[in-house]
Image 1 (cartoon, helix red, strand yellow):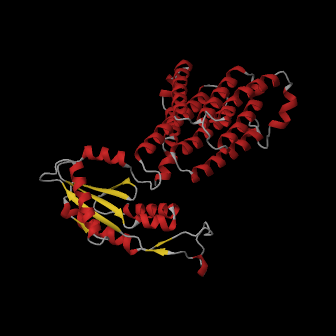
Image 2 (cartoon, rainbow, N blue to C red):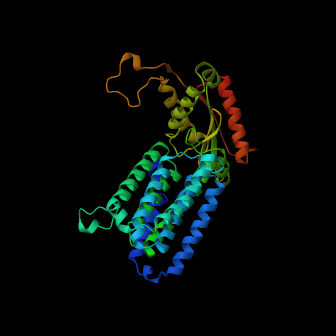
Amino acid sequence: MQRLLNFFLPGGVIVGGLFLVLLTPLAQRLTPMTVDIGAISIGIGTAALAWRFDRSRVVYTLLLLLFAELADRNLPGSRRPVTNLFLAINLVLVAGLFERGMMSMRGALLLTLPGVQSVLLSALAPLPSQWLAPLLHWAPLPALAAFPQASILLGGVAIVLQSGRFLRFPNPVEGGLIWALSGALAANCLPAGLLPTLLRAGAALTLGIALIEMAYILAYRDELTGLSGRRALMECFRRLGSRYSIAMVDIDFFKKLNDRYGHDVGDQVLRMVAVRLRECSGGGQVYRYGGEEFCVVFDGQGRSASQPHLEALRKLIAGKPFVIRQKARPKRKPKTPSKGDTGTALKVTVSIGVAERGGARKTPEEVMKAADQALYRAKQAGRNQVCI
C-alpha cells in the first residue's frame, strides 16, 4: 500500500490535476506570463530543496527541463529533433545513475553536462537539417511523422529504468522521478507553447513535493522496520486524550542473538517483529522506540481493554518460528524446496509492559515510564509475558 502511495503521490495527482485544469475554462485564462511566473517560481523552489537535501539527480532533471524549455523558445523547429535526442539521452542518465550527492566529483560532473551539451547543440545549429533528419525521424504512420524515433525509444528506456529503480527503492523521490521523466518526454513530443511549459512545471512541482515527502519520512519513520519512529511517537503524545494506555515491547535475549548470529540476523528479527506488531488489534499504534524496543499506544482505551490485544500479539510473535535466511537462499521461494534450503529456526519472543493514564501518572511520559517498569517486571518474571 505504501509503495502505491509513493508512486501515485504526488506525481499522479499533479499530472491528473494538470490535465483536468486544461479541460476546464480555467485553461483559457492562462496567459504566457502567468505560466512563466509559476514555472520559474516552482523551479527555483524545487532547486532550493534539492540543493539543501543534496539530491544531484533532481537538480540535474531540473536543469534538463530548463534547457528543454529554452531550446523550444530559442531554436528553430527544424532543430527540435536534435534537442529531443539529447534530452532523451540525459533522461536515461538520470534513471541509470546512482545518487552521489552534489559535492562529489560525479555529482559536479553530472551538473555540468547540460551546459556542455548546450554548447554542442549551438555548434550543430549551422548544419543543414537534411543531414540529421533521416537519422532522427520515423514515420510509419502519418500521425507519428513528427516524432523522433530515437528520442521516444530512449525516453521509454529511461522510464523503464526509473520504474525498476522505484521497485527497488520505493520512496517518494524515485516515484516522483518516474512522473518527471514522463512529463519531460511528453513535453518534447508536443508543439512549443503553453502545454509543454505546463508539463515541465508540473514535473518540477512533482519533484519538489516528493522531496518534502522524503524529508518527512526520514524524520518520522524508522528506515529499518518501516514503522513510525520516536519523533512521531512524541507527536502522538501531544494528540492523546484523557484516557489511553501505553505498552513497551522488548525482544527477549536480543543481545545474545546479535552476538551469536550477527547484526544482519538481528536486523531480520527486528523487521519480522515489526511486521507482526503491525497486526496489533484494538487500534494500537505501533512505533519503534529504539534498539529492540517498541511502543504501542492505545488512544481512548485503558489498560484492561488493551491487555487482551497485547496478549494476542505476544502469542502471535512467539507462535511463529523465525528462520534465518541463508546466504545462498534464492530470491524467489521455490515450489518444492530441498532439505538444504531450510535455515536455522529460532523462537523469538517478546516481553511487554503496559500502563494507563491515571492517579499520579498524568502525562504520556509518566505513563510510558510506568510501562517500562512493568516491562522490567516481565523480564524478571521469566520473559515472554505481559505485565501491568
